[in-house]
Image (cartoon, rainbow, N blue to C red; front, top):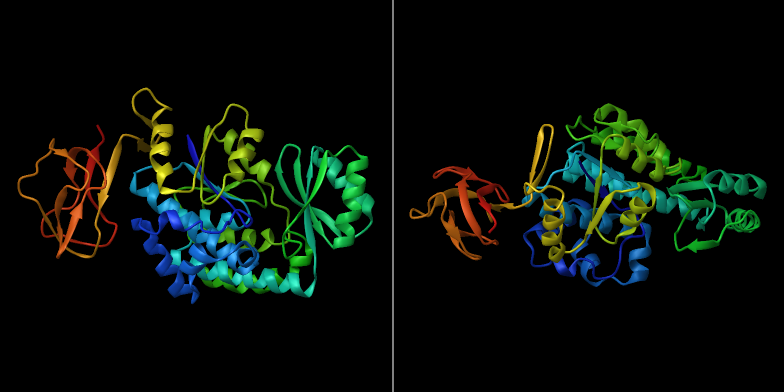
Length: 391
């Protein structure tokens, strides 16, 4: 069984959009720019590390990048049984499952980032990763610091993040080393996220979450707050609000997914931080990260390797690792090519039909299994047109 996981703030990096600029999924960037009233393309292509470190840029670009990857993966026909996301990534997971629409997700992420940035400016704080110390000992270090410092992220065994005032984080770091921590590493962030320092942002975000009105989903999302799987939309209003000032229980989310039968974890989005956490947390798990178009074939091979029959199958769901979809490049009436029939060999670039004046060309080589769209049908951009089995 497969779970999609989505990274949070900190995974962004300069130029992370360049590999996608010529890919069909890049069209999401224009949509996001219009909704956010920001030049998301420029941020993904040209922004430097300092500009991307700004919470408002980091969250928006990571969210859009992850959804570009998801869009490309969905075109291959790969679907998960569960989703989860780390902090910001939880919003990506909710958009991926349909609890939030794309526009709603963009607006909510922008509001969240603005609120967190403002809270960080009004009440300056910082964060640090404590490595090599048990969870309970890190909590002891925070209490013994006798200052404004709390556990913010339970990431993986031996990897916990603390946050609070600069003085509090420094004091807790000293105690953590006394208790046996191998390293205390300051993080380059603009606030003490997932602590009481974010309470003003939480108050501001409640209204935006209520307006988004999350919907029920078929694919459950495991929450950072309680480490439980949820598919009831009404539950997310309180969960997303609480998430801002509560610790991210990511290690516990991974263990929950494992208990639910998940064996395979695919991280979709920039970086591979969550992949490393899954390896450390869930013994025997299979992991992969996908952040560029070139890694899509690697994903298919990875999915295919899970089953000698050539695909993963689990109750109520089928993942065909050797099958691919050709999708519409535009909106309009579809006209198939007359001479193509089921079983025909298709080459890369073969024309399968037309949508209005636009050619529908296959990005893959394979055997035509069937047309999904019928002649005369009005289709939308990215709607599946034909189904191929790769050779």
